[in-house]
Length: 307
Image (tube, rainbow, N blue to C red; front, side, top):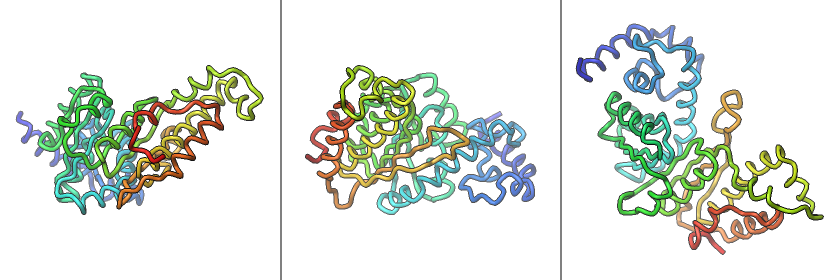
């Protein structure tokens, strides 16, 4: 069976299965960008629908998660769409490419605008799966993938080309910093990262000797050290982004029942571009107050931050 015939047959099954009553029972009043009847081919390519176009309970949570992601980024992406005929996005650490594919699909089927997305991940198996999904979804003319490290891509500006947005969802430890550094280096107008497993700062704190400093008890309390380091890392990233000329909002982007790693840092480049010297000073003061351990990201941003 050809891909086009497969898609037509799946759409027909979806049209029969997703009656108004069944759709209402699934959505329960939620306003979503991607409805199962309209996006059956995409959702099947992503493994969210069964072959008969039904949605198993095991993938319902993922379905609502990806819709929520698009809604959270929607206004910022709308601003990019207003400024650019073609919106170019890098998904740094794309993993199984849910958001990569969703943004490209919304461009084609919701926004009537070309959205081109580059998915980058160091795992070649993940990249191969993303390529397979893009072909199935009919998005391989808008989505491409590269198996390489994000920090390597940041150094290869010729290969990167023009970039309007960089996103990185649940990129572990310093991978979120890689996405931020890539976005700043590329002059991206939007950087959106949802950090996960931030361990760099906690590792640094663990090496510090006890002192009379008021924050010192944290260094020798492993659980609290990890928890506080995660939030402090996000605060440091926020200040560094502001120092580099971005307006930053830290927000919840997925409800707690889905994951505890639910903080999104959404950074939009100031227009006109203006670096924030106060944010740079606040970052330096925060580093001093918490033991003198900062993020390697600060050195990577180098001259792009105010001083």
